[in-house]
Length: 389
Image 1: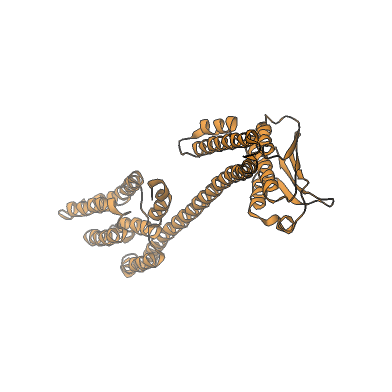
Image 2: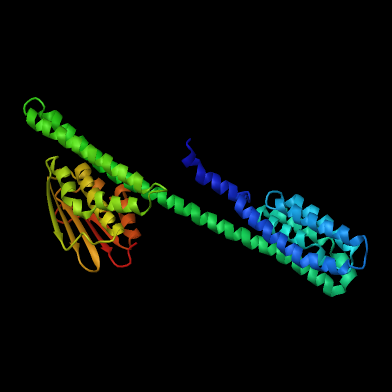
């Protein structure tokens, strides 16, 4: 398995384990250290000014907490234990410092643990942080107890909120990856299915006339070569546009050289080479359409023609009509094939037609497909121009 196929899942796994990038971990440490030095360091300096040897010991403990916080994202349980022990030691040395302030670093570690570790682990850590509550009550009464418990619970809740936010982000990222893979799969299906269908029919025709009409067989073989080259070119453009570094240049190149309503005649020629009569009629300007609408309309025509070749029994004629006005693009593809069970209105749930309906829906439009009362099969789509992405 190559690296590119592993990276998305590895990234999700890393996020699920609470791993941070080096830059994010450094930023978290700097913020935590600044908070502890400011909120806890200042009271320690003030309260320890008249306690002789206790002040340097308390300062060393505070600096130790700051250093230990460096590993809070990697080992939050160990950091929580270390900062709790050192915070209790600071409070024992300098009772003038509130227990809530002395355990500030531990509360920060609890917040990080709550955000990055499973809930059962964080709940046990929350319970452990509540154990010193009697000390807070003994030192500050009911108010001291309330403040201590409130700050501990708020730290745990903030971590849970962050964890939920990260879960939503991961879910959105996974959904975006799945949608992008589905879009690429649709593009590849449209290119390959159409080209192979045409090539199979042309190869069969060449085999039928190879002995009696060699020139016609050569014509079919040349058409196969042309179609294969065109499909390879489309696939190259498609992969280039979907490369991470493709950027706007890849999109513009795909728009200019790749599938577009401006290339309907070329598409029709590949089908005509099989002996099918294809009539194309365009009304309105097709060169100023949004890229998404232009591509969707082209693919709808391509898939409809492919379905005619593969499934329209007895069809020898198909008409394509594209109407462009200021509000929408209307696409209609009608063939004269006989209606069979495989092409009934209910059978519109085939994978190809489902893909076409999804294409139309993605640009805000709609598509219907089904047999006509007088015979033949119709695919009709309406794609709005305004608001298309």
